[in-house]
Image: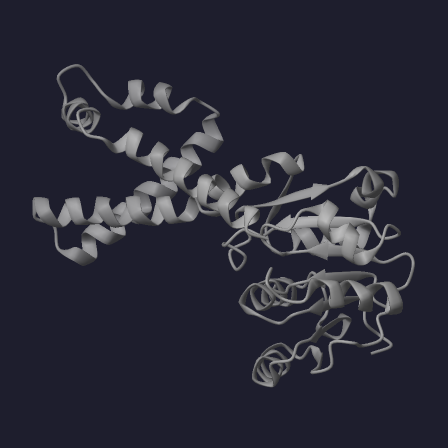
Length: 275
């Protein structure tokens, strides 16, 4: 593995999604990525589909890995992973964690105090190039100027956009930002169902609902207007639109959405407290 630049410890679904986006987007070459995992079937799939180097031995040579990606589960043996990194990684390596709920301070206990640690909460839109991944670093990583690292920036932007956050905001970001597409999917499904209820064929209702969502997002970006301003423009006195909004205002839509986000953030914190 002498040519490795980025090494994944763990080859699960999130690791695969990131690898796929990096390679398909021509951000990182396949021969610059390697993966170690105890699941031989996953390794065969990753090698066959993406051409990355693989190993079913976790304790591999990490001396040429510029970025070591921790893509294991929170319940896995993190102490052993940390021991391998301390023993095998080059001193200038960056440790990048995708592990949910495990804080930077905990990771530093496992890996030692000599490596910059970057904690990443990936978005679920990796294949589209949209969506923000939440990224947190601590004072040591700041002192090592990791945000100026070209390979790290290429890696992070290879599967979406990057939003640097204080680590105290990571749980909120997870419940709001990472879970965000779920709320949008649910809204689009409900909007299409409303069209069907009103009498449109399902195929047309779905097509129109999706186009409206894409167009509305584009309008907000292009005009830089507040949603309320566009609502005012789109709704004439006594018109069709304002009558529809009246019924929506009488529903629990806004409060229900807000409760959903708060519940997701609460669950994220609960999972972190169990580590």
